[in-house]
Image (cartoon, rainbow, N blue to C red; front, side):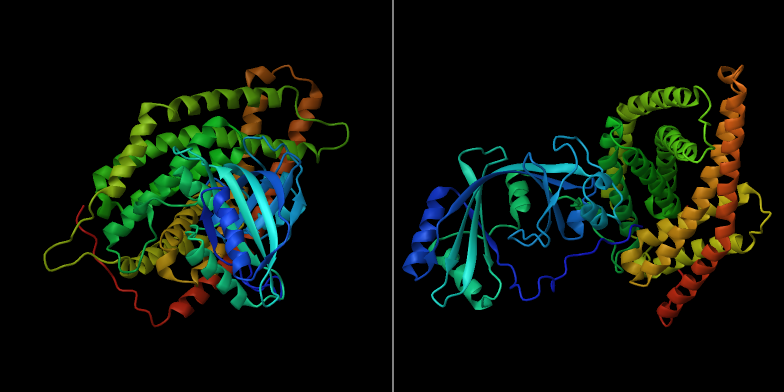
Length: 538
């Protein structure tokens, strides 16, 4: 679960009046007609300024910024980054920010953009990809109402991006300037709609351009992946969950195959894990045999992704540890080169597997399962609803995780912590699957689960990293290495061991915070009956 990004604050800007709707234009004739009608109604347009803009809209693969009400726009070859809200006028709360990157890159790292953008994107922590490039001819004019209020009209004219490329499209936005009476904006809207005959735009410039291109908004979900509701039969809720996770897998894999950023492989692998958890948890309502068959195929896809991801994590850890080695010491000779060769082989296997018919058939089967009719239940025994089942499913996963967590001791083997990590991962996914049903108290609860899962995950990474390093040092290719390499291996193993000890030391506090979150969630849910429900026979 990712924390929500800071949403646009309606109070930002102090006395700034609210944004007004935007309108669609077919060409320059409508602009000229609008100005004529404004003059005849007593408005005073000033001189028009014209500029040309090359706008590249960016977002995460899953449209995280759009879902939280933001637009990130790279303006022009010179590279000015604008953080905008999604109101129809596309207002920029902070104006332009300097951009430190290649405007033609296929993927963008938020950390390399600007400090301000990094702050905005801190909760997303994901690479950015181009959504749409819109080349705009902008006309802008300031007008005065008969009462003296100030407003700005902006026409963004751009070639039709869709199949119908006849002529150019226009997006006319209207914004009152600070200190203006909102009633003046309402009068302008009525004038543009009724006297000029303009149709209201579906949203801001990006929304308008995407609609004309026949493309969905960033973050838009297909109908089967709509949010789970309390009144949904559990079979329907199960299909919505599968649809959402299959949609995410389908979004991430094409980017993972291009090998542009390690996070794409990571996110695709996580999507396979979420799907496997959903199919295991909800198998009785999806068809046990069908669910198990899909789980096996997802395990195959997850292994292909995992072989690349595990090497990415190990290489990243080694490079970070190298900076902490004693002066004059470096990574063992040839180790990184051997790991990069291993990664290249793993990447080739991943691309071959996930580009082929088997993976395409897996996505198709997931889609058909999500679209299949949910079971109706036995006569006289309606199927349980998500609202009844979700608290029970969460409680079962929670009890398992708490029972094993309470048994952890300082001397517990690493395997026990790894099994506990898996239980907390299942608990997290269960909570996220039904978060819309379980209510607002789930936010702090899931954050506590994620923090504990991250601690256990870092411990497992340290254990696996040490094991992999020993295997690499003992491999035939490492035989005859200079003594300095063995000293470096020893120093790296010490760092892995120290990391594992630190994570173990963190565990009691993390687990206590989780227990506190459990009590708080149950306190808020007190009085809400968590009814039992009966699973259908397998």
